[in-house]
Amino acid sequence: MKTEVAKISMKPADLEAQLTAIAALETIKNNQKKETAEAQAATEARDLKFDQMYAKYSALVKYSKILLGKDQAIEALGIVVKR
Image (cartoon, rainbow, N blue to C red):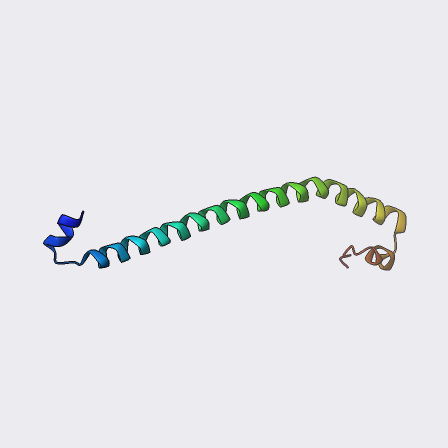
């Protein structure tokens, strides 16, 4: 590679600096890919838990409306009541 660099009149020190910069960028890119994959896995795990909880939440809302009947009592549980 140094012979090709000599043909375009680039100093070996400049070549080393550019190769070091490229290696640093590759490291940053790989870390970003890793963080993106971890974030996607966390999102998928969260969505799975929400899906599991939704059935229980739906049952709670249904029973609360039947048992409590009053809008204020249901809202005290944190369930929004449409009027």
